[in-house]
Length: 181
Image 1 (cartoon, rainbow, N blue to C red):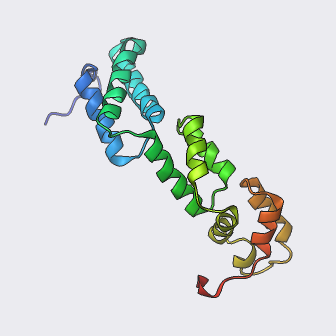
Image 2 (image 1 turned 180 degrees about the vertical axis):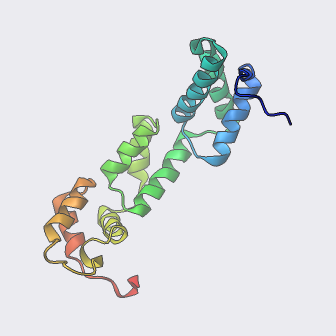
């Protein structure tokens, strides 16, 4: 394959078509889970980059992006409710508070009604999520040394993560469970 010389201008990218956009969306969804709004933002960025390189107006392809997202919803390859349930389960396992989880879901483009419904169905209690975060970040009972001196800072770290004071203090003051190691 011939390598272009530095003085040669690179070829412009291929045109933006429905087929290209569908393949780009499918490739993205193979690698990452996404909500409809998040996939739409990703596709808009791809279209914007390619349109700018081709000297075209990105706004001309807004309908094509909407059609592609609608097609994935129609094929049931994109479902906000199942995405929100899976993302919430992952966040709660990592020790995310309900407030922080709701914020993360809304950042990903999940609407308020779906977020509220998924949070309502969540069975994880705040205490176990706070303990999970303390363990992951090695706070409180999972700290190797200077536990008493760092108590207030550890509680503050859990409160910044969205937990109320009572739950944060209980998680920090708890003892390490025997089966934890």
